[in-house]
Length: 378
Image (cartoon, rainbow, N blue to C red; front, side, top):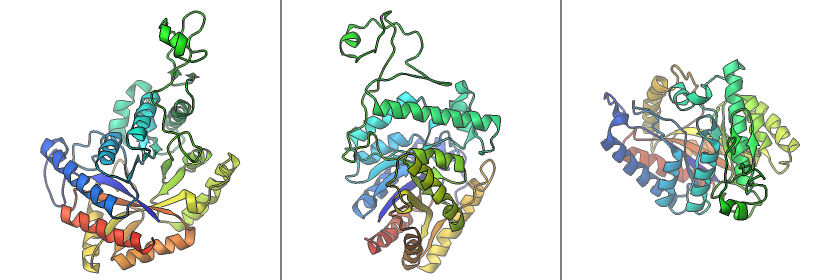
């Protein structure tokens, strides 16, 4: 059984009443040290991977996941075995060529430990700021004009990333991106000699280009790192990533919803040639980590997290349900995981781990207790 850690860093601890903690450099240094120590512990105690969501400008100190790719590099450099990834990068907030290059570099520098995840973005404060040149904002999968534009940008940006990863050089001309940009005159002799066929036309105009580097070569025949895509409610998003053969990461706690989703997902995946996918090797089930050494401690962890969740997540503009929680003692969580493994035959799980909210000792104890769950199924 593989278990990945979705780290949600907090620069505001439980019970603190402080203004702008996310802007405090000393707090960030503390967060960096604490996260590093915890991921080194995880690396030595059976965990498979580290990942983060993407958020920016979180000056309130809540979910301070600025630039998951730099976090990937840092954790990879300070561990030996942990995979590193994102769940996920907002394709609507980045130039896809830059994103493709940065991820490929991490793939090489981590020794092939990278996995990738992509989303459309759910936070208007930073997405609308970073993507203002594209007239993009967040939506609620409501099929509005804004929602359709956001989705088209996400799908086209992924097309560019995939082309960059799977082709030595290429061109792309779509609604949002032109690769290369139009009307670049490029009389560079090395391109004419070494830049590949068709890179420059007879008029000296650049027609094809590629990224440096491309991802590492893989023994499974794929041209790029494995895809892990978070999923909540949008079936349209799920079907899109099914075409790409991505793993589906879900924190939805309602089994009946997953029972409805997975046949649709797999039908779409199989239709597009991913015939090896099953529920067991595709569905990655996650939950918030509030495990305790005793029932009383576990209940206190849950109540503390529930207070945070209702304040910062089940609130405007998000209004998201909490979803699954790994709640209780080690034996109780073993029963929870075991029931899901038996039902879905799934091979991978995720713990949503709140670094910086509890004390360092409590958070390390949570990781240690869940490591016992991993060991029970090893």
